[in-house]
Amino acid sequence: GDPSFQYVYTGIGAGDAERLFEDGKQPVIKEEARLIATVEQIDRAVGIVPRGAFVKTPLGSVQENRNFEGLSLTEAKKLSSYFHFTEPVNLKNKTLLEKADLDPSTDFLDSLEHDIPQDITFVW
Image 1: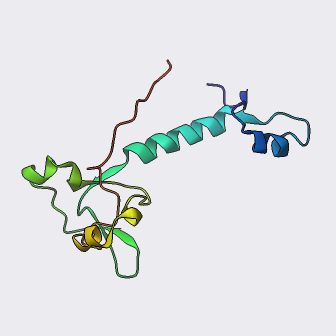
Image 2: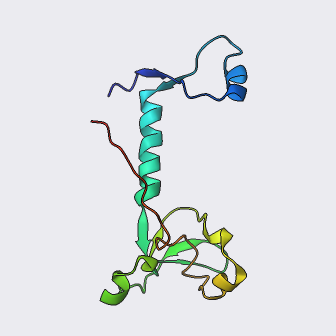
Image 3: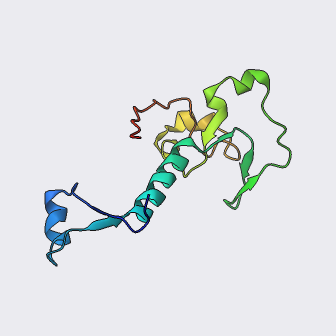
């Protein structure tokens, strides 16, 4: 598309509308900003890594695991062997009993095992 094209944003809640329309202008979104947001959403949804490919150090930094040689065929067939490569959301909601079975150095991301596919409609 044309990066300079501007969309008029119409999906505004009642509370936001008062604040956004104070200057009398409708908010606009440039094609470039919309494209960046769309790519980030797709990247967040599809960025996955196999269990063990990255490790979390005791200081909290995440590093590539140099000793990772891949998953076994059995493990590669399980959704629980793959993680979203984004900031964890569901991990924080686990109970202490569920967290007891996790290895903090490798199980620090959200697993794919409980993901429910969303209906995504593409407009061409």
